[in-house]
Image 1 (cartoon, protein in one colour):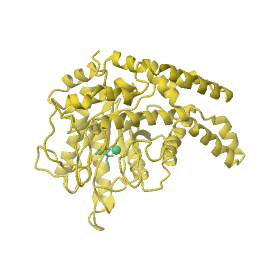
Image 2 (cartoon, protein in one colour):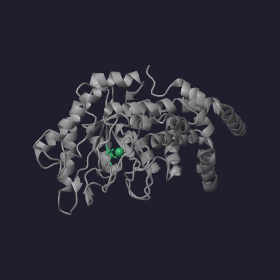
Image 3 (cartoon, rainbow, N blue to C red):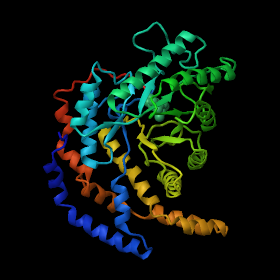
Image 4 (cartoon, protein in one colour):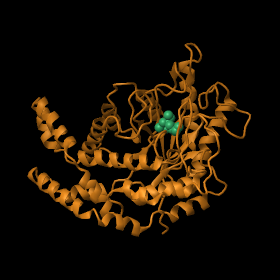
Amino acid sequence: MFKAVKKETISENNQSIKSSLDFDFEYLEKKLNKDHLDIRLILDQVKKFQVAVPTWGVGTGGTRFARFPGIGEPQNIYDKIEDCAVINDLIGFTNKVSPHFPWDNVDDFSELKEFADGYGIGFDVVNSNTFQDPADGKETFKYGSLTNSSSLVRDKAIEVNTKSIENGKALGSKGLTVWIGDGGNFPGQMSFSKSLERYIDSMKKIYAYLPEDWTVLLEHKPYEPAFYSTVISDWGTSYICAKELGDQAMCLVDLGHHLPNTNIEMIVSRLIDVNKLGGFHFNDSKFGDDDLDAGSINPYELFLIFNELTAASQNNKIKNIAYMIDQSHNVTDPIESLILSANEIVNSYAKSLLVNYSLLDKAQDNNDAIKSMQILKTAFNTDVSPIVAMARYENGNSIDPISTYRTLDYKKKKSLTRKNKSGSSSGIV
Ligand code: PSV
Ligand code: MN
């Protein structure tokens, strides 16, 4: 297999800090032992954790106002795969990417798959884009896609989705995420009722096209690009539609797609209970759909989400949840942001593995609010970074991925061949 980062570079960098990691790991092992926690069992689970990187996340994002590209920006899906391979070679937790169509369209998908295979990169759930106009046609999605009042436009939007499924099949994917920007800016602009009916009708056609072993993930979002009403605005609407479509339809929770102060971990629990939690888009936010780096603003919330997931998984209530990142990196090198975000996600997962759920059950049954809260806080406050670093090391990756990455001078070298288009364009991704 081809390596984006040489094995020797990783081991050279690891060599000088391995004894320090051993020291921290042994200290944590003793600490966890006191609570009858076996650090090796936790490490084994952490070593298996995977979260997919969005292909659109390795390019610099932007806002409605401007985009400031960095140097050596990926110019096409092949460059994006290379950047994702750098991330995965350094951390090992991201061996799949989640592509977006038509952004990542190529003429020959088997060639693309072969290229990615060569780097040890696979393809997770694919995404369809009907929030921008299709490049080829007369139809416009300006007034909606799957919910448009024109059946011609709806058919075009359905076609974007069925083509995405075809592309995904060629790439070895097993799922499609559908997020639409459809909605209205004015009261009265559209019928809430008819647009939802049209959504379900269009989705039924996409669902009928789905291979048997595929899942379709419905992604909700309260506002933006529509600022008065959005057709699939919340998890309740998403659930109603997934239920109507059938067992292969599940709900996807993008952490940024909730109004401020929403209890997202409770939504996660509800979707688990109704058997409709299918996947995540991880990111963080302060105000709205900010698409900031996972765990950078509210790491406790991320932990509480994993707390629900781990509790449910220990009770065999969930399987095959698609974990994906969905972020926009406006001021950082996206590779560094994605390295840290994936690690934050793994970190939260590792912390949730420290929670003693039978003790928590008892405390809850005894109405002991303080004890219950303390059980969660103790896990959250434990520094599990030696476990996550050891997982990376034992998987053959970097103990300190950011400093290893910086020794590569990767983007500077890439800038010799990857030429950015001049000027700065706007655009949210
Ligand atoms: C929309 O805000 C979203 O979260 C959807 O997942 C899109 O596919 C993605 O961002 C990229 O625009
Ligand atoms: Mn998303």
